[in-house]
Image 1 (cartoon, rainbow, N blue to C red):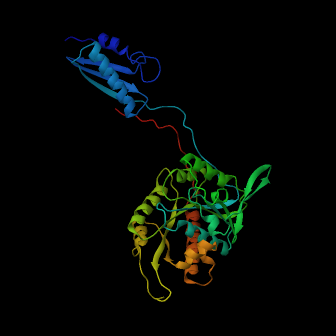
Image 2: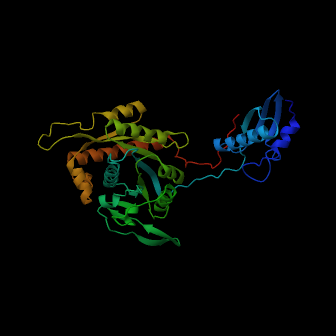
Image 3: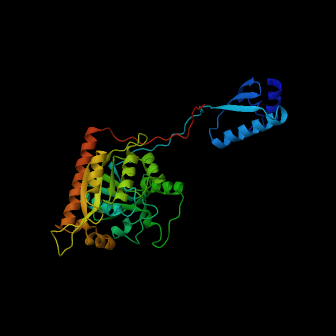
Length: 375
C-alpha cells in the first residue's frame, strides 16, 4: 500500500477540532507528517494539556486515517503542549491597617484542642498587656463565641471613614469576630470552599479592629481552601501548629507544618504545641499518665527542626472552663493557668525573634496560568 502526505492531509481535513469549527488540518496543529511504509508519524501541537483532550484528538485522527487512507496503517502521534502566554491573574491582599502581627493557629487534625489553645493564648496575651483580637475562621464549626461567653451576642455595624464596618465583640480584653455570631446555634453551615473563603475574607476585612499587637486566626482542621485563602488575603507573621502526642495526630501535624513551609506559601512556623500531653488526677498530683503517648510532639519538633512551644496537660477544668465561656488561663495560680501563660510568653519570644531576623511575610501570589511544555 502506497500512502502519500496529500491523502493524509485530505483525511485530516474532514475531522473537526474538539473546540471551534476548523478541521484538525486547517487549524495548523499538525506540524509534520512522516511516512515509513505503513507507519505514519504525526507531530501535533496543542494548547490543552489534559489527557482527555489528547485522547480525543488521537482517536479522531486514527479513525479518519484508517477509514479514508489505509485501514492497517500503524499511526503514532507525538503531542507537544504549548505553554500559554496569557497574562496571569494575581490574587493578593494587603496588610491590615493597625495590626502588627497576624498569627495563624492550625491543626491538620480535628479534635486536638486547637480552638481551646487559641482562646487561652489570646486571653493570656491580653493579660500580659498586649492588645489582642481573634478571628474564628473555623467556618464549619465555630466555637469561639461560646468559649468567650458571647453566645447569642450580635456585633453592631458602625461607620468608619464613610464605610460600614463590623464592631467586634469583646470579653476578657480580647476582640472577637466569629461566624458563630451570625449563624443560629443549631444551624449547620453548609458552604462550598469558595463561599467559606469569601466569608473568611469578610470577617477579616470588614471588621474594625483598631490597633492590635496580635490578631490570632483560629483555622479549621485540614490544609484546604480556607488555609490558602488566608495566606492569599493577609501576610501571616507566623503559624502555630497544635497536636496531641498520638501518632495519627502527629502525621497530620507534620502535613500542617509542611503546608506553611511550602515554597509557594512560606509562612514561618513559630513552633508546635503539644496539647493533652499527659493526665494528672487530683487525688494523685505527682502522677502523670500519658494517655495519648509520651513526648510524641517533642520528637516531631526535633525531626522538623522547629520549637516545642509548650506541653499542655489534659485537665478537666480546661474543658469545664471552655464550656462556661471562661478560659482556663484565668484560673489564677493553678498549674494549667501557669502552663498556658508560659505558652503565651514563648509565642511572644518566638515572634519577636522571627521579626528581628526575617522580613515581613509576603502575601502569597497565585496565578491562574498553568502552562507546561511536554513531548
